[in-house]
Image (cartoon, rainbow, N blue to C red; front, side):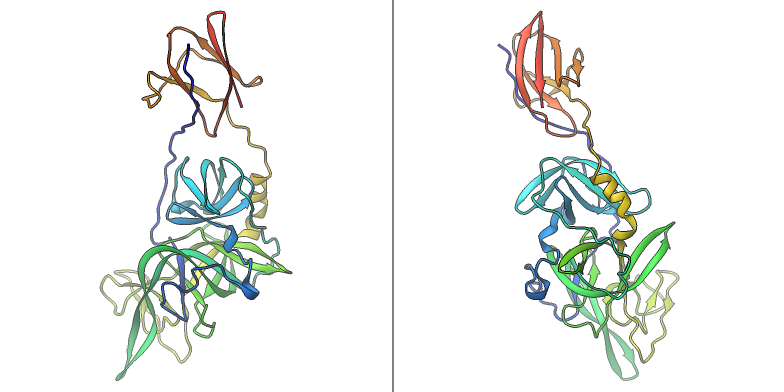
Length: 358
């Protein structure tokens, strides 16, 4: 009597983590780490929170029954869980945009809902809700002005991976960035109100949402932000969210360049990949039918492994069946593939074991 079990495994993909790009939401109006950590209500109800899931220590946005979207530089591996609406969905396949940092991920199972995509090219000046996961607001940053100290913003604070939301407005649409990528740029304005948001380390891949009629839609993926400054022309510098860069240095050690102070604020900025510019590519991924390759068969003497590939296996993908010689009196078997396969029937005849799967 043969013993059979089913399961699935896959080889891991490489990942690239760029910590200077990993972003989350910081607020102008408060440094309270509990502020804006629950779903917004009132005029901002259903403004994107319901579509944001957790991808490692970062974020991803559900966009279709079997897909979420994030950015490549936050990393991740096949078989990592995407936690959404209280459930885990394992990553089965990555689809990387050749023209931007976007990554669409196919999951095992079906997500219960997904964000509609913003398709208009009128983002300039639009009010946005930005949602991300990461640092708290840190200590105040001051610049000397004669005998006075003038506050310019706040240091990036403690990383806590807590989901937060904030508001902003699209200040500019940037084209041909890094070889053709289009970005939405937001400024961290002191006049933007208490929920005015900037980004800080912790969560690229969060969503930027714009209201289209009565429906909020995904318009951008958080990707980068201004944040590296120095109080003088030398030294390692500081990492901060500034609503006025005047009087501080930018550019990086050893080439810090002074931003000359002026009567007007010179806000720091953050950048989101423009969804409307990559809409055809995104729809091409989530609208395609992806047929998983047939599974491979592994065997072990115990149900807990170690499992090894079985070499003498005949696979018929059209009938979803496979066969192998019935040599051993007993054993445990599992299917290996990029998604879950379930063994539906077992038969032994003509000296072979036949499995069908779905």
